Image (cartoon, rainbow, N blue to C red; front, side):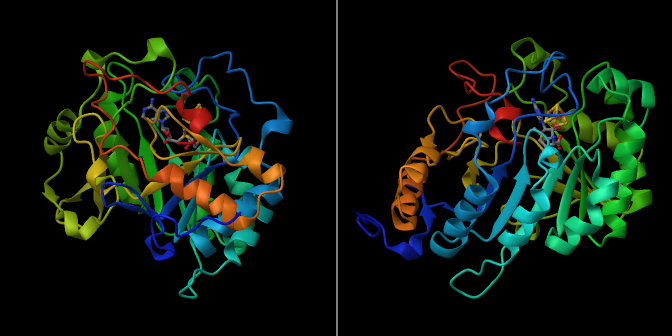
Length: 346
Ligand code: SAM
Ligand code: SF4
């Protein structure tokens, strides 16, 4: 039965009760990963989702199509776990690139990756339709990389980001999580590296969404601390919010520009008021917030024969109660989600 339009007109897309509209879809393609970043996953890995419980390539494409055609999704970011572990990624991207929204526009397609294997696949991914890429890079010191990720793969990551640039992906963004006493002394070096290679680096405050013992509020390297540290070496000029739109990073020009640095301060400066994201897990659940306690299954109804309108309605209903904010990370009363980051999609 089609119920679209019951409460909200179709044009409202994925609107929530607080007036925000989700136009930015993050699709996790797998919970597996070939690194073990200490803040994300235990060294032994996690109990992986059973293969049969994951969305197939066709199911991912169908959901992206429903998002773009029926629900106002304008950009899609493929993530994980590590999305490059998904062998069908290029096909998923190419099929997604063929969709058009009601205004005739193609969705912007992006990838968040640890970069391992990107050197080999960047050209094909760009040809398939990936325009933008975020690569995680927490350190430039090989021994530290090995300690932080439990794998000695820094050179693969650096090759991957270079290949993304060479393939024409723009921007190539770098994501860095600083950990006290581990890599926080590298903030300036990471920024300089990004400036030298014309990448756009954003620091991400560590969030309580990894292994339970990996997060201690008193140990978080805060946005302010990062800025103070950078200010010892660079002149930082803030960019106005209008210039960055709903993007979560606050941005500063470095030494007058054009290079810039961003800080995603989910802990210190939550950006929920302008959040335009919705997430789809690798096992087909809609999450209206990274920190949501509830999720809505689309995979079961899809496999039971639900049509596109019915899936769209389930999705719309899932987004409507999106919380106004994520409840104050690490403060009294905050309850971390049952899934960790790699099982949600970062
Ligand atoms: N494997 C890919 C990667 O590392 O880019 C994609 C998935 S990963 C979960 C996405 C992003 O989440 C990465 O930039 C990673 O640094 C970040 N991340 C993971 N755990 C985090 C945590 N506890 N706090 C803040 N950021 C985290
Ligand atoms: Fe893997 Fe990304 Fe998590 Fe690191 S942050 S363990 S690369 S999913």
